[in-house]
Length: 369
Image (cartoon, rainbow, N blue to C red):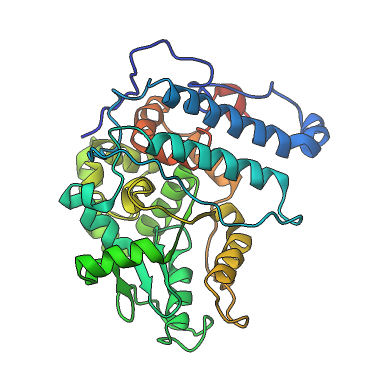
């Protein structure tokens, strides 16, 4: 069980407080918002650099060595780091290149720490089983894909099935079967696993941690009866003063986050387990880490890298899908107990830091807008 508070035995610096405790801009009126909209991307880039750069400095100075994070308990030293195979493309925006560079530096530094695992064989059995169960295999195109629920994994599985010849095309209107016609590293023998990890192109996709949690919450407790009965009923009974009779379909976002705070990371459901624990980016040398925010551009890059036929394109978002907008996330985060949010963030600290996502800004001034 992880601690509920981030405590590294030192005064909290401005960099460490970035996101949830720092408002990067003073309160502005509507006219000012329109006037500043043109410079917003550069402000966001600066926020990412501040958040990640501050954490990077903490890592390099060993300030996180004694912090209890999602537990990679391997003892090997690994000097490799994520290789960004994207060639310099004049059409790739500068901000994306900056974020990729910060991400690579952060992963390299974090994964170089002595307490981090340098291979999946250094992982405890539970963690090794989790990552092997989440890495899909395509022997035909020689790639490995670590799927992360709520990061377009259904569409990626659809693409994998088409590439492997198990599905006619990505637009076939069928319910996605997440197991059949798919091969996972967990299905293979150790020597077969080692060979593929060493020689195949490896990729994964990430997403803002809080946006991913909100997407999981809205989908599973708002639409899926099985999740309402299995998790919703128990959450309401555990965290509501007067639960009464419930079907588990009215779980509040605060109750859901409280549940996550009390859960053991390694026993979490995959839809809200931290991305770090699902894909173990220190134990597996991924050649490319794409972003949900640049889903189609990054997906196209991956398809080119693995030699996919030109007619196979990443599927468009389903018409019934309800995306989590910036405004929606803002509403949910600003309407929960802020202490609960602060206590939960350390549990997802590696997802924020390794993948360059700034902590959510939920200061009073920001939430008023």
